[in-house]
Length: 416
Image (cartoon, rainbow, N blue to C red):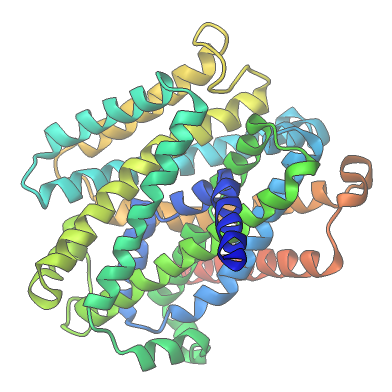
């Protein structure tokens, strides 16, 4: 019985450790992420699975750096950027981030509209109702209750793993492509390069770093609790990329194999699976898309509001009232209302815009990582908690590779 009690204690400790890191990583599998991973599987089969292992390693390193900076300094990332690099530079970064984040917010309501249409609910009913729900859930709730709701919602991501198994993929090919680099000729395909940058951008999104660090600060995590927080970050990063792997696999096994290479509307990714993988897989995928979209529609505007208020020195935080932090709450409200309104425009190109927002994430990522690496390697800021050599190697390599891919994409786009 001693071993049982020991494992019971470990499991309880593991669950207790889950928090901002797990939530932030799993919001990454939002509507934009699901559509991007689905398009990757539908368009290129299993051949983009090679990105998952290096991306997971990079995600762990990047997320861990933000969590550590938050625990050591007690300040958010945009706050540190303003203090160390000045208001002008901070303003430029925030403008870029707000533009990209707004595209992500639109993508979340796209996912809500598309998933509810699968259940024959009009977007003109589903989107306004969802916007009101996420606004009330965050503004009228408190941080602890909101966090519990998000942690519970994360469990629904298991639906994609179940759907992946029901899709009966070619497991051998999937495993081989996960550890096999693409052929050189793949990089001359602009669409392949575009999708690669999109996969990176949707996995290691810039807004995640700002939100995670702010959440660590707001939760009051200090260096004493940092071991539990680091575990939280690692588990969240691994879990979210396992889900991403299965989304690519199930779409490769169903859509790609049966010749459907283009996802035109959010419903395509789920609808096309109904006759192939059965109604159960279809329902799982549709429910997962709705949950992911609703989940991220709350977090993304929240992350943006935190970032802007920190960068410009306004009061922010869910522990403050509307009167104490009016800019924070108004910005959150406007992003939700405007994002929902865009989706209600007839014939708006929802899926292409959702994938474009993830590519823009990839283009902005090296900029954010540059500031992060400059900050975390300052001894006067981090003391003995600066990066170790191997962390710097992984982080700088990630930044250089993404920059290189981004430049190649821009060059190929300009020259056709």
